Image 1 (spheres, rainbow, N blue to C red):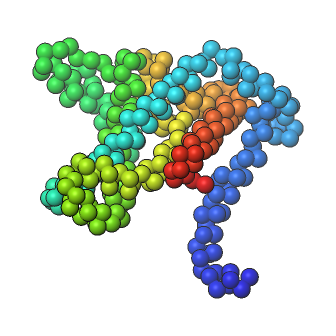
Image 2 (image 1 turned 90 degrees about the horizontal axis):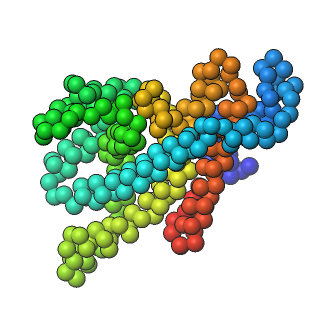
Image 3 (image 1 turned 45 degrees about the horizontal axis):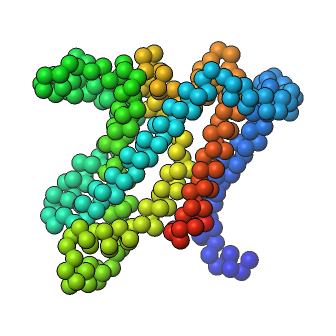
Length: 299
């Protein structure tokens, strides 16, 4: 208690984040049990009938199961594979630029889109990919090809979603790696220069090992959210033409649990719980692999 009294200001400072976690992360766990019940709002959670794993079995045997899992997995994997290394490449490139004006200009141009709201971003995507007036189709026609209806062709949805997200967030994610690069001891670069290493060799043998622990921590954290592919953006980009490839777990849960006239809270909760368990397993697996390879890990 004496130690706590000496630094009571720090405990006050951490009180709000702890209250937030308890209120919005731990207390809602009480309602997870409706995934195992046939929840009826008038009867309440305890009064509703216990049905065990029937909601999970219903989801597994549903017509939409494999389509939703496939779409979520492809979008998540595509986003991680394409989006994770690009901020590192951008940070390494900017770190080796000698012109401060050029470096700051590129930083501003690349991280500014991060502050665009999801609704505005989807509106920009629609304008750019419009088959008649979109700038992308004007360029395609300029080179003699037929215009493409990107938002009406299901096969283009994955790429439009992923690369627009990368364009929006790559600059902001790059800031973390630039901060990590700034902590690398300049003496290491000086020693490498004396040994005759060029810029690429210094990047490979000095810069990359220096930011590798941060990169692994971020990779582990991204893996934990791999199934959270961006509910708002996916929902806004959906239409009847691309629904075959755009329906993911989050949008399906929303439609079943809230948007449907016969809202099925138990069924949607069961689906959400399945996603959470899969994300937890992936997080633990990647963290364990990082530990086995003697790399940085969350714990």
